[in-house]
Image (cartoon, rainbow, N blue to C red; front, top):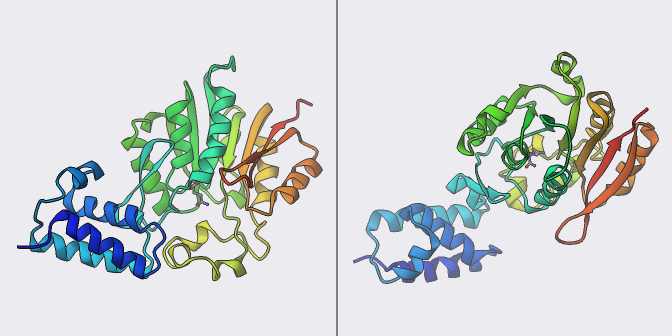
Length: 293
Ligand code: GLN
């Protein structure tokens, strides 16, 4: 007889801990849940159930990969964001709780407000589509354009729009933002543009934790030598694509908010610049309104 769920869980937590994995308990639980195809409650309620050899082997294999640094989300293929399920593959960044703060800021501007409907939004560098899909899910009467340079990422984003039943409200555009978004010319101006662009300086990527450095797509992280590769283009394009009063919402690196706020000010096209803090109190987002002139 193989070990019980409880025994394997205990062994797994010890193993992950010994290998320096931070969230050893949660990660061990998620790996077991994935292999057993059950939720976390099941592990507690059925702790004495014996596991078959195949399952134990599978768990141990995934635990080894986790110990080597692979994020558990790339094993289970899932991450929750804004209380919605998102599929993830190694073609996309794992959605972060920090980004939720920016999305919540944008939602607040449009929930129960008397903005003219329908709304048109854009998510630049959509990756998994977590931002675009959340806006489409929580804001009434909005269409969101999800833009990405990676076709592989857009395929994941498309699945996530379907998974969350907003396939009709998200439109996918395969485009490099540095080249602009020609499609906008044929449509009306946008109400909101949001982006969590790659902003990590190239030289810093090698110093990041293994989970990020060795498993997440570098083109989704790498913001060029100084980390500012994408912001000037986004700020410039957004000034052309947003309607007067339209909202620009950008996620920024932990030490970039001052510089980005200056870039936005210096462009002379925006007003009402606001900083949004993340859960750790770090300046994580910058929002501004397109001027009316
Ligand atoms: N928009 C996605 C996210 O916030 C992807 C961002 C990126 O790849 N830089 O997670």
